[in-house]
Image (cartoon, rainbow, N blue to C red; front, side, top):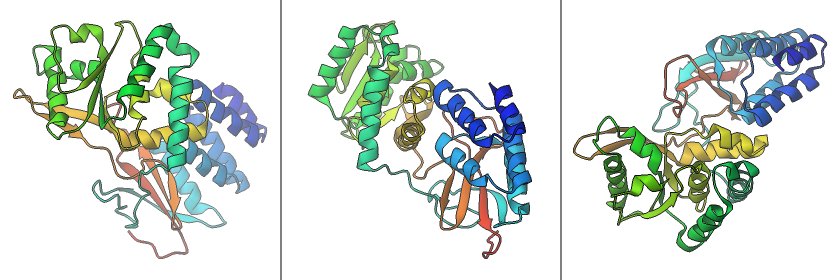
Length: 329
């Protein structure tokens, strides 16, 4: 498919090529090859147009370009004839969300009520009730879950029990010890906790202080986790999963964009356990780690190749300011 796109770029069929790139990412969840981005950027440079479509793509797709491609993009924008930019590679203050180059604040991670309602409906209809879920879960299990959340929602925290148990293997002798530690962390704060887990993990385990929904051992439990977490816009959820498959089941850029923003706002990951039962979390960022434009500047997160866990977001950014403005270094 990448070969088809390259052929389209060579023949100046840019709109069709971009449409195919969108199709790869939205429908297939595949990565676009670097040389495809290179062809796209060369066309932008040759024709001095098309930059807006590339910016628009970065915003909607949520992709993180690598160092080579982001450097090429920076060079092109600095050397273009019309409305050039000056770019600086930088980082963002984790606490404030302020760019360390231009000192402007990045957009916060808040989601509007309408966006959240659309996300909730999309997850329920396309992820929970979509045809694929029945390959792992029986229809009666879906109905049991729907009845459960109708009676017990909303929750302050939803915990991926299987994921937490797996993460605790190196610290605890038994998997339920890790789960108990995480539940205790939140219930000690008087928070309403739901644990999504598999039935085999509950054998001999008592979680009196939390609500529990247990799926069959062969069921896919991620859809249940996500749909539990969107019963309230204030709910946080604990999981190391990146939910890439479920993201692409949403089927359009707008919902995928809302999902990413919600995920960055709501998802908590476990950093470490200690043998006394303590747990340390990576808290959600308060700003959006997606390409964004505000106050005349672009901020584009990119992957500099630093090893990171699958759930971790890049910490490196390209800050682009109009060449005619006062540049802050």
